[in-house]
Image (cartoon, rainbow, N blue to C red; front, side):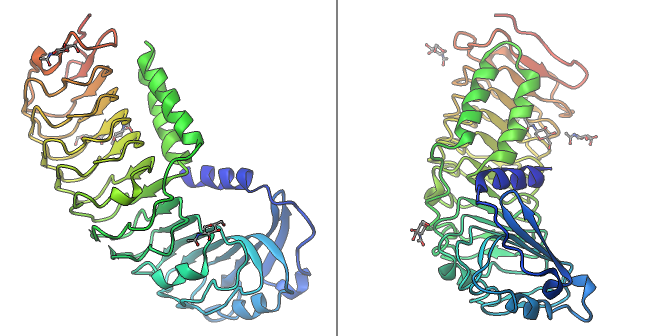
Length: 391
Ligand SMILES: *[C@@H]1O[C@H](CO)[C@@H](O)[C@H](O)[C@H]1NC(C)=O
Ligand SMILES: *[C@@H]1O[C@H](CO)[C@@H](O)[C@H](O)[C@H]1NC(C)=O
Ligand SMILES: *[C@@H]1O[C@H](CO)[C@@H](O)[C@H](O)[C@H]1NC(C)=O
Ligand SMILES: *[C@@H]1O[C@H](CO)[C@@H](O)[C@H](O)[C@H]1NC(C)=O
């Protein structure tokens, strides 16, 4: 769903002029070319070729230069390698490499010589590392997706030459380690006049009004999907994030970390992430959160720690989260919430505590009643859907 929306956004945002750029159909088989509203789109279903399908690169070599193509898709391939200068001389906005379960190698010059390449999407391959050497040849790259592959680590300095990236989406790999220096150089993963900024602002307004519960989820979903400046590392095997890892991307709007193996959140992990709207930590193994772990995420309006292993909430856990309206902490092992835990969170209106079997009561002192600005606070406790707290 998200991915379709992103495609739509890219199509809308692309705006390249349509022209008759398609090469003749007979020279392209089994690739096909169509004129979309943004320009020519070539799709090569390589399963129609014999063997591993690497002959597709001969077909690409025969496309007359210069030709301007908006999307170039190669799918269902059996080859292991993308060779050097495979597309050189063409002007292409986005390259898609989809469903190539044997692909392990991308030549350092694979994309060298392409004019205007802004997006690279790689999905369902056997890549075990980000091919760091390709970035110097793609100075305009803004979107990099490597999903459903076998990435294991994010190493130091890999992205230093990918400094124009505004979206890095690495979900559904097996990443277990992020070097604290891995995101160095990604300064552009920041929010500038972005529609996401509007979304977050809108969301904050909605949650401050009195009919919030429904719409905020919609907005959260939208924010995730449309976020143009984001780092998505969901569905990996990350165990630990060192404080400072995100310091170079401190204007990023969304970092997705759900469904990993995180066991703790250290103090300072979110330091400086002042544009983050959602703290996305559901489906990890978190059993402790350091005091001040989220400090600095001053714009966060949703904290999602649902489906983890938390036993207590200590008073300083949410320190500094003054914009939060919802806390999802259902499906943990909570037995105790320290008084003061939700102090300094004046906008809070909903905390989901369901499925914490040992949590049988919550002291009113967890809130500072005089600072609450919403009309009521709802708790969702197992069995009792809500305890109203009229102001
Ligand atoms: C980023 O993109 C801009 C505009 O396309 C370009 O001028 C600049 O050289 C790129 N930055 C890097 C580090 O390549
Ligand atoms: C929080 O995570 C849970 C579990 O994935 C999900 O059901 C819920 O919708 C999330 N809440 C928000 C506000 O994103
Ligand atoms: C919470 O856990 C229960 C019981 O294990 C499960 O049925 C439910 O789907 C979980 N809720 C979420 C939002 O994942
Ligand atoms: C509660 O909030 C009020 C209003 O912001 C503030 O003056 C007071 O110091 C707070 N009390 C505690 C115990 O934090």
